Length: 145
Image (cartoon, rainbow, N blue to C red):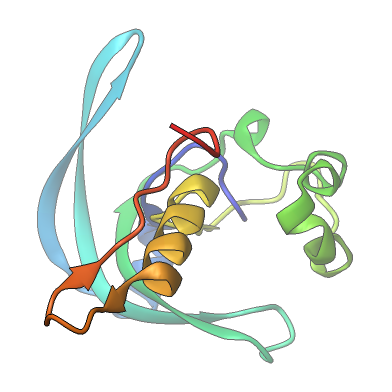
């Protein structure tokens, strides 16, 4: 499932165990408005997952284990995904949400849409000058500073 708030990808501990994923032990700190919570986890780098049809594969840089991923109220529904321009094309590929189904994997991205826009502007606009320097555009929140 695509998770809208997390900055890390997670897999259920029992799924990781059944796949033989060992990982290094780590303690995560979750900071919210209500304070801090700590979670003991394992971290594994470079796991590869595929879609339900096995056609699209993705390698995840870091995956953490968790005992429970069942926060259904935090999940994107078809209705919510359809509202996001950059996700609209994925709505047909989303499996239906089944009440009571066990969620075993959260996949997130490490860059927001604003981060991606910034990186694109910098990577496309950076140029090497005749006097052996580099010029890089600095994007602002609005078009003009």
